[in-house]
Length: 234
Image (cartoon, rainbow, N blue to C red; front, side, top):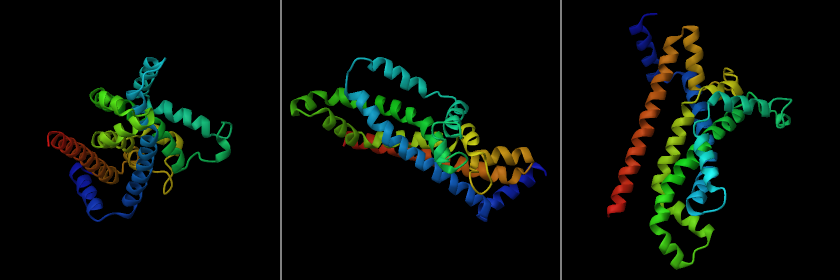
């Protein structure tokens, strides 16, 4: 198959909304959106806590969280695989080679990202508003809540960054999902498989969709930042 022919077939698959293509894209979105939601539920409050409080060991925890941002995906996949395997502590759940296992792996991978980025964003807000918080006599929980609400636009960009990292993941989800057709095959793993098989049309079609999603996420991040800046200067 020639280069031009492969691109033509790929565009046809996208424009015709090929059934297999839509199935793979749909699973990718479900897995990554679920992982992003769970990671935000854990990471954003943790980031706010680190931004708003000072306690013994905070520096070490910050170093750990920042270090975990660079976790190798294959290592995450291996750890989750061992945990979910029959001999692992969570093997009784029977989640290995299911979309749930892929969600767990992506959650482990992007939670440190959401925590570290939200801490950076909210620490600036906390330094700015701390005198007001003190004058109002807010508790730690109220302070964290106020930071999360006031920084919602910036935190939305953090969530989008986490989603962008999750949707592009291949190593971890390949290990724990197994890349099973019609069950755990997502865009990144399908691209790797179809390329190795020589089916460049489907691989390119999935690549086009993945690139479109990346551009959409980046445009959304830019729009949210611009909106936040306008709101700040209003």
